[in-house]
Image 1 (cartoon, rainbow, N blue to C red):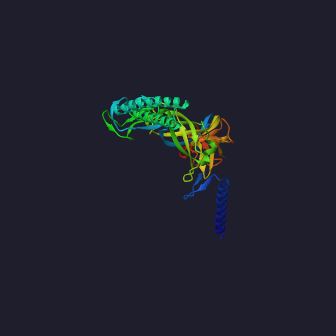
Image 2: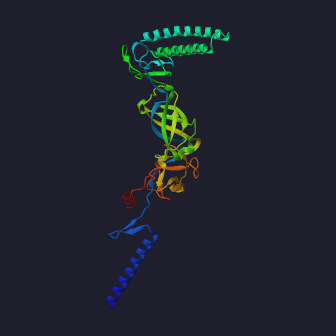
Length: 371
């Protein structure tokens, strides 16, 4: 019985010792028991990230649209008489001035008519002057004087009509510009209202864009714009808002805005372009790279590096932004270190590791050192 009592006492003492050791380990929070009953140390691993200091620079706020260029002064030249083409004076690609002669049509009949009416007008004028002189001397009746005046007016109208018919045999440019189409050949027999040429004024090229009505407060006449065309390798061309429609399209909720561009080498009517309207410019803005931003529902955040390699999660309210940068309204300063890579899984107060920081020791290497 004495031996049995001693063994039981020893077992109880050993159990209490083991229990106490286990409680001590759990209280420190550095070890845990695995399936084999072995203790392992818990370590909070720092998350590798990259940082960049906030800098200062220019930020432009822009609105972007696509459009097809068109010329506001784009004119079709039509024939005004039914005649044969006897002289062709311009070709596609030629630059012409307003009123310049483009084509001569047959005009023998019109010239003969003009000569005839000119002679008749001269005769009627002499008769009217003679009748007027006699009427002033009371030598002819008033009716004779009125008839002479009427005949003179009719002769003048016939003369003016003959002049007009002759002018139709000379086709002239309605505007100054470049001949972009020629639809007639030498010797063709043309009819009234047949198109002969198309003339485009390359100084009147515009892009018509349709801007959402909410953006109207940001628009004004002469506001600068930039135009780029993929067909020209992304070259940038200057422009400005020329007109803003006074009405909103109820179907689309947009406003038609006409952007004019001075004549620039390469721009052509019909070309597809991208249009940027510059709505605001800050020359000395604090710039957050957009790759540093984290979006959570309707809010925007950045992570700022703090003391002891911990990060602080900050909400950002944009004051101005473009495709690359955002200017914060407040809360950040020049030189702040902002996480620009690796921030997607971060939480406020998380530990981080920067490039160049010592690598964490491998647990296997640590065990070998302990041995």
